[in-house]
Amino acid sequence: MHTDLSEPQLWEHRSTLADPDGVDEFWARTLAEARAVGGPLRAEPVTTDLRTLEVHDVTFPGFGGEPVRAWLRRPVAALRGDAPLPVVVEYVGYGGGRGEPEERLLWASAGFAHLLVDTRGQGSGWSRGDTPDSGPAGPQVPGVMTRGVTSPETSYYRRFLTDAARAVDAARALPSVGVDVDPSRVAVMGTSQGGAAALAAGALVPDVAAVVAQVPFLCDVPRALAITDADPFHEVTRYLARHRSHVDAVLRTLAHVDGVVMARRGRAPARFSAALMDAICPPSTVFGAFHAYAGPKEIVVWPYNGHEGGETEDERGALAFLRHHLRHP
Image (cartoon, rainbow, N blue to C red):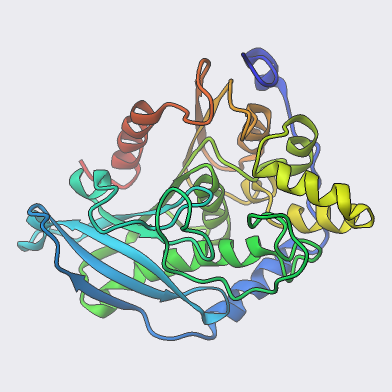
């Protein structure tokens, strides 16, 4: 069954979420602090049984200069003197990490350089991760939604989204460590939590080439809390059921990382997708971000799908979209 508004209503729907005071200054300071510290970018070759792709184990400085891991995959045929490849930076869904070197081979197989970014403090659910989260602990519901959630300064998602922006910086710096890619053609993409990261990276690094946000999470959080009892949003609901005096602080914190707020700052061409039977990322929250998006945009709607969205068909559409905007036939 449909979990939210009908499709005609979604086209009329607009989020009422206001930008929190000082949000642009908050993010400018956060990124300036992150870019001022940290160790070097590293890209170490990995031996695998893959024959058509090469893999590098990448480490780059993220929030607070802390090391974040990623896999870089490139087609072997591209190493024979052709022009440098554009880069697709991909972020991972909730609970997952970068996985194994042999996983998620679509983008490199399609001829792109593919930087798959690990997720700090996650990666013990449906795929493995290698990046710890050093952020403050405290009372929280299991998961990361309420980790440090009483202040924008301590919020888990401040750290996660900073990592997302710094991953774009890392992709552009790969030639400095001997990996030949085109730093002028970098796109960002992801599904669910990864889609939230892509929206944020496109807002915080305003000259990315394109953004793909498939059934993105973390959009219009106040509305999501009111209309779904599915996790991860329900982690916040359960937290506030016990910490009743923290409502205003929590909603203010989450507004600093909300996909609607980020979308208002996006300028690159963007492709969204929404599923009308999605209880995890209700479609009105996705449409709230879509309608707020300030750059060229399109959205595909999957009427009879849940949070899986369009799966392979979504990937096929994203591939065509990125081929066009990265000028990579």
